[in-house]
Image 1 (tube, rainbow, N blue to C red):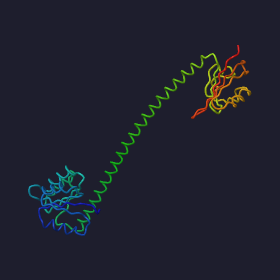
Image 2 (cartoon, one colour; image 1 turned 135 degrees about the vertical axis):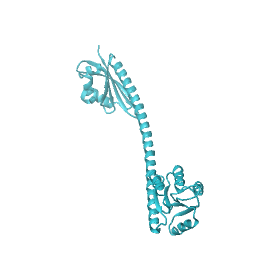
Image 3 (tube, helix red, strand yellow; image 1 turned 180 degrees about the horizontal axis):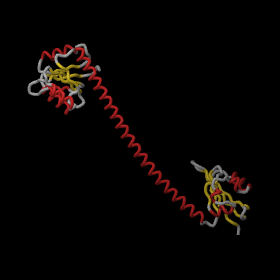
Image 4 (cartoon, rainbow, N blue to C red; image 1 turned 60 degrees about the vertical axis):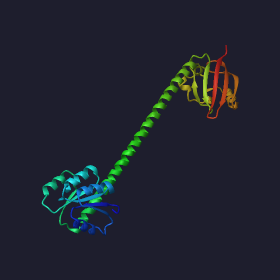
Length: 270
């Protein structure tokens, strides 16, 4: 990890110099501090750091106390403790509490220390990567929730519109069914899309059977031929014999930008 920043804390200057020499050929950015308090000040002024390696026996603030404070204030930083004394119980307790990742005894083996540092920095990068993935997943989930909320609003609005249109169509159909004239409506291609009860009776079909039929298969051929001759917005009146009666057919062709329509009103002869 080329960008790793490591802070070594020890009250013995010769130990800090030894550590600096050991990492001369490593592509890490090395900082040192001679006490726990100085280490905290370095963290505040130059942090954050990926790793802190601290001696245990230091005046005023020992290594466990120092790293416990680091854990509280910079919990993502990895923590290692060095000790040349028999303070095993205190250090093991700190490890068990999660304040310290690893304990290394003084005097250390250079190769072992370097290997341990590499492992700890790999662990840091893995945890950082997991945090980034979690943040991205959380952000993606929040965005997905927002999209779902917006979709639900759109669906609700469209459902309300559809229900309103459906009620309007029912009201319109109720008006058509009480008219004293037959009514048949078709699209520009001649498919029947609307009718009233009287219109269906006059052509000898039920309303449900009439919807979806083509005018050419429902109405007498002469009337169909005259309808096909209408162009643009135009209308005409024709006498026609239907299965149930002789009537006058008032045909209107409506040509619009979005769609064409054919409206037929059938009035029985008296």
